[in-house]
Every structure is written in structure tokens, then in C-alpha cells.
Length: 221
Image 1 (cartoon, rainbow, N blue to C red):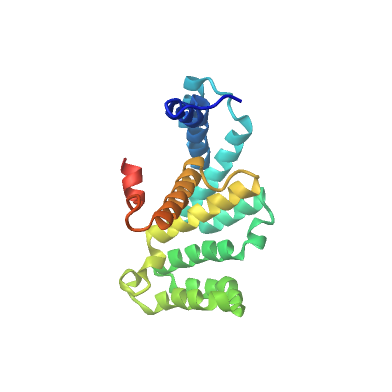
Image 2: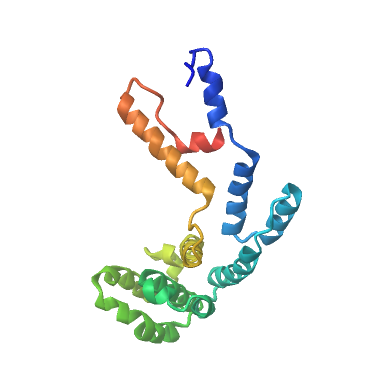
């Protein structure tokens, strides 16, 4: 093996760190598959000449339908469809099952169907109260019934779009994992790794070392 001169080192590093087009394409493809952007994926595949991931297309359509139900106020349908494509998923993921049921409860409360909401809670949510880790969350949801305007209650976030989106994201990741696909996109994993590496470097170099890492600056850079 030849000796690498200091002058040659930057060029060698550039070669090692060079990002190939196929790597970038795979990162984009991962994002599109994860978020069920079928039409964009098909256009992207056609433009890049990549082989179309046929198996992913069918999976994407099923996931997209399930996630849409969760987002659009039909959590029970989302549960039904999830059990059709992954019969043991919710049985093995009680946290997610509770979250989906809680979405339906919240929808009933917001629709002023308090009697129906109470009956639903007694039949579907109360059994979770046998486990300590669900008690506090269950109490928070039941507290919604005490307010004529639940959107103005201290637990208003439980009926907000952000909570619904969070549950939908968890469901999407669980469905991906069930089909042996990554539950996080390639770009998310890259950002996570970059964050860890930069934080480690900051600790090694101390306050006089490299500038503190800012995820926001990284994303905007």
C-alpha cells in the first residue's frame, strides 16, 4: 500500500465521502414510501429510471387508507382495517390500541355525544385502567366529559390535531415495522446519527471546541 501524502489526503477523503446518485435516490424513495406519496413516487421512479418497488405500492395504498381514517375522525375503521392487514399488531401494541380508541372517545365528546362517550369508555377504555401506566391518561380523557367546552379544558390537547397526528404517525410506523420496512425514513436516521455524532464531538472538544450543534441550523443549512 502506498504512502498517502498530506496533499493527497483531502482528495482521498472527498472520494470516500462522495455521495452517489443512487444513495440520494434511495433516501428520497424511502421518504416517499414512508409517507404514502404514491403518485410522486411513480413520477420519481420514472424520472430516475429506478426499478419500481411493486410490493411497496400495494402496501402504501393500504397504509394510506388506514392512516386517513385515523386522521379524519374514523378511528374505529382504522382499527378494523389494521386488524385486517395485521391481525396481531394492536394485540401486541396496547399503547397504540389505547391511543386509537381514545381518538374515537374524543370524537364522541366533541360531538356532544356524552352518554355514548361514557358507554364507550366503560366498555373499551376502562379495562386499560387495570394497568398503572394507563390510569393517568385514562383520567385525563374522562376529564373531558366534565367540560361543556372541552376545547377550553386543561386537557384540550387530547382533542387537538397534534395529538391525532401523533397517533397516526405511531400507527404508520407500526404498520411499516409489521411488514419489515424501516419505521423511520432514511433522512430521519441520518439526522439522528448526525445529531449524536455532533453532540459527541461537542463533549470531546469542550466549550472551546467546535460550535454547538443546532438541528434547526442543520436543517436550514
